[in-house]
Image (tube, rainbow, N blue to C red):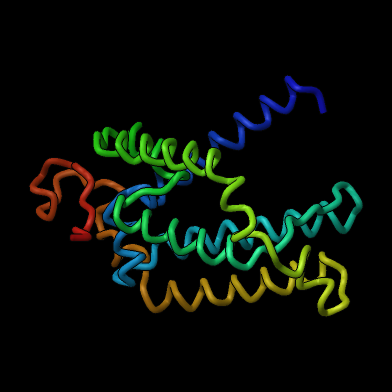
Length: 206
């Protein structure tokens, strides 16, 4: 693939991702914080849907030999400590690296502070990485489930995608998205619930 083709593919994928992010309302700070507090499950549903879709696509591409997987090494300290720090930051800021640009585009002015903080954090880690490297190194190397169970990746991926889909069905039956976001999230014209304004109504997450 040429550089120009890669740029166009990246832009197309970014456009699809951005549209899905906006339509699902996952970029909303209230939705993000609500998920972290286990008050709503919109974010979990969307992310699990993305994981299931990615597993099916990767299973097909890898199974037919179009791509080869190159998993990163497992580093226990880096993965656990980094995940916890990121989770705390997402909860406090009501945003993450994947949603902060959507928030800026939607007019959330405090999202600029989140973006600046993320850039400063990445820059700080870049300078401190040589010092932190002895603390964050160490692990089993490239640890993947397909190698542990002795099955081809595509089989494991399809099985996990099926399990995730079943979980999503159960989650949706338990907590329908209309209930969590509000019945009129997709717009309403002249409804008494929206005061006749036709504006979107999202259940308050605060």
